[in-house]
Image 1 (cartoon, rainbow over the protein chains, first blue to last red):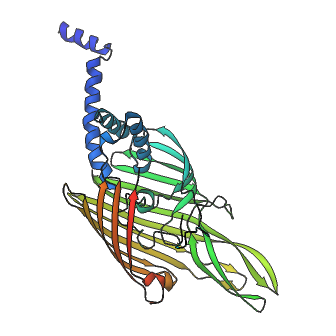
Image 2: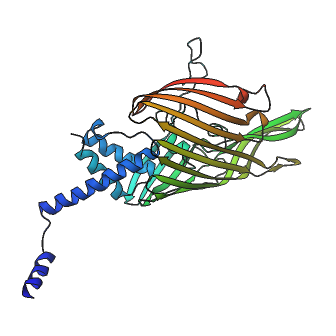
Image 3: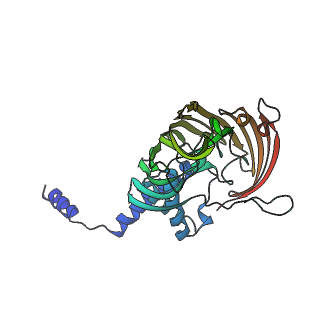
Length: 87
Length: 295
């Protein structure tokens, strides 16, 4: 019982680690890949990640957020997928 | 910009299609202010760039003087409420009417609304704003169904003759636009369709009265991309009805596209156009070849 309480207390005050951030980014990457594949082709041909640099993708995804009516979270997920896939 | 056969561009105009300031409010809303593409329907705001449009032309009724609004000057709030619901709502200066005035013996005999100019105006003659918008719903990730509306007043300035004298006149008429649109991608096929109707109420000037008028258009389009190949086939049917028989058009369009890249293509299309008046330009069939490139 003491161990459970200690673990709960520690997790309450735990700061995010690199592992947490990496896992969250991985989730966003997967989510972004799905959204990229399903959303873009409703209007136009699919543009592959390697076509543009990280900064260009930032401008493009925020432009497309306006055009297609994405939420901020969906836009960020797609941006992470595109930036992590363009090397 | 148009270049004529003799190489001159006399009479051509250069137009700024849209220019906006966009402000991100939060994850679900953005403010767009300035001259923007009309969010009524899908074609004008999302599909009309030549590298996106599968055919070299706009569907009948989706251009100047058609049923579908082109652009607007005003303020717009738009965004996504969830991954499956998006929206746009705006307040703008609204359209103007193109009035035809028939004068005889120093008196105005007839007034007629020729068309509604649904392109953004920097000023608002009657200071009455229009309200419009669209809501899109994605029941499945790739399928989108949209519904649009616009209500307000269209205005016009024109000259009439009375007792042999010119009189400046400014009039307004209630206008309503509504539409639905749908897109269904399925494997290598993409099916889409759009319907828009614009209704303009009559108005009176003295003893003269214009008629209630309607513009109505729809199109259905199917396209097929050969798997792994740079070739694409497109078939579109469209039908535009206006109060003026000369402008009506029923159209079958067939196109073949060669995709040099995803954003660069050569398009060749044949349009079979029909208008009851065989001398009308809207009755002419045409073949169009287009090289399209987009960023």
